Amino acid sequence: MSPGEIILNGSLIAAMPLALLAGIVSFISPCVLPLIPGYLGYISGVADGGAKKSRIIFGSVLFVLGFTAVFVSFGALFGGIGMLIYINNLMWVQQVLGVLIILMGLVLIGQFSFLQRTFKTGIKPKVGLVGAPVLGIAFGLGWTPCIGPTLAAVLALASDAGSPARGALLALIYSLGIGLPFIAIAAGFGWATSSVGFVKKHIRAFNIAGGVMLIILGVALATGVWIGFATWLQGVFGVFVPAL
Image (cartoon, rainbow, N blue to C red; front, side):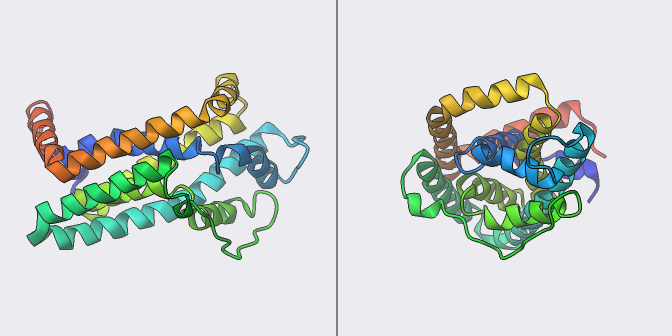
């Protein structure tokens, strides 16, 4: 499958911005955002923030690569499962996925809090750059239940994409939604740090908005509106983008 065939797909085109937004929602969740200073201190190897900025940035990139590898693997797996299931059960599977995403939206809003839990992986990476990617892997595995609502929605879209490559691409975009703000904070961008303060003050509103977004997406999948929208998008992009 060529890169053009992967991207020039109505369902995937519609899902990519949602995957990025889902990653950002995960980043600003109550179980991730408050821990950012601790993660930065751990991967830099300096608890008091005295490390060089270049070391902190490099460590943050390694950390992001670690959890990206985990999420991309999940995306490819669910994309492959979707490719097998969708052969004969397209509408039925989309309806189930829609109900699942609606449930995840309710979880993000604050319902069924028992579904937002973390577990310890037992992985204890070394402090500093050497342990940064391992810490990222531990984050991807251990915090999956906590960021589960948004990740589940992306994995549902990955299975809807119907191929491992498309599923991996969506998971990669989701990882960027989490990772880019993290790297921006590590780099010391003023707008990033000030944005974190604003988000902390209004974190409940952001969670509700994210939950509503998931519920709308779930309803669209369950009712067939998503298929119609994806078909329309593919027709639009098919006109302006030559097939590769």
